[in-house]
Image 1: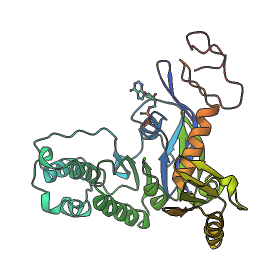
Image 2: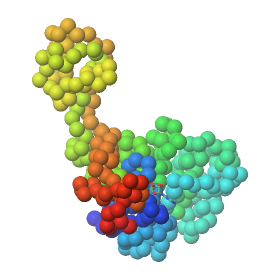
Image 3: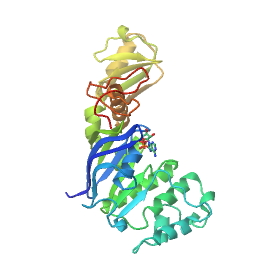
Image 4: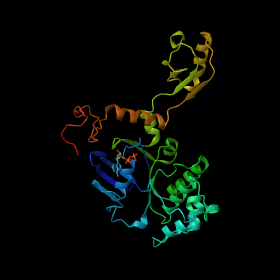
Length: 325
Ligand code: ADP
């Protein structure tokens, strides 16, 4: 596999705030890479650094070239904050963006791809939030890019529109387009991405295919029983604890759910509902984000340190350690 995108030790600070604290990343041709992470983790800054739309230290290469030198016909970018003129129609907007490229796609085809064929002649300001976002996604597709960056493409789009957009992105990926996207939707990341990278405090704390991440960090399956039963009164061979109004029993394989039901019956405990679930990417996210928060340190410098040697902070919380950027 050839890497379409290679980033090494990318760093970016805004004043005292360290937005990116040494991110290295490689994305192969045809791969879909999803960046997830809490607000302020650095996702947008990383997309901007990778696309050359902000200055950053370290090296970034797209198709072997600096992002600012790369043939722009090959790259599409949907920024998170994108505010096109309100009194242009969706078609006029896409026509405008298509006009910036030598070899643009048919605007009607792009409008149809993003589900806007019927509303193509509506002013941008009169489109719904979801339709506006889809127009913006369309603007990143007019040049039929080989590499597509989408910063929160589906935010504000209703579930049906979101699924339609997933189908579109999947068909682009099947056609060989390399996609880097950011999202807060773990179902979206799991469905679309070959690899998911979790960014926390400006660092990439894990990057792998979603199933591997779930196996590694997702924890155990959970059986949640709405009951007032005391776990100590139940004859259970699985770890169980009370959480609010529920009893949470861990590590129960699906075929052993009956054993828990029997134990409740034997103890004369009633229950209203019982839900079994496997860990998913959201569990991974919560686990990794909380671990990063636990060990991380972001003082006035924004420097993060998760190796147990967090810099000392003075009374005002200002970091005093060496090595700050
Ligand atoms: P995310 O996209 O994960 O929410 P961002 O990349 O937007 O995170 O922000 C990372 C950090 O950098 C945050 O602390 C944010 O406040 C800061 N930051 C981002 N852009 C700017 C900017 N233009 N000026 C100052 N600080 C910024």
